[in-house]
Picture (cartoon, helix red, strand yellow):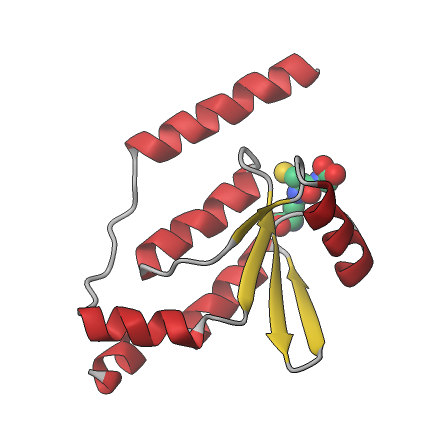
Length: 127
Ligand SMILES: N[C@@H](CCC(=O)N[C@@H](CS)C(=O)NCC(=O)O)C(=O)O
């Protein structure tokens, strides 16, 4: 079962690398503004988890770079996820606001949140 899961994970990574989604075009200023706006976000994830791949593909589409925290291989990030979010399940988007953190689970909810926070129109308006 572990071997099958490993093989499936590699296939997912390979397909993801071959079929990259198209990326929106941001100017240097737009990209810098977007990155500054995203400075309180981090994605806890596993490299070969299909739901994490789905979220990373959305990040690519949005041309948004977030810290990717490997909760499978890093004891620190696994522990942060477990104690901060309440369970080890990925993907999970950590949203820091002051001393508080919101831990957003579910790939579809994360994608909806990112699309709402980084809409194309807002990028153009900031230009
Ligand atoms: N419905 C969830 C499914 C997430 C899910 O099942 N993630 C798996 C990895 S692919 C997980 O975290 N499993 C817990 C574990 O392996 O410890 C989503 O869309 O995010």
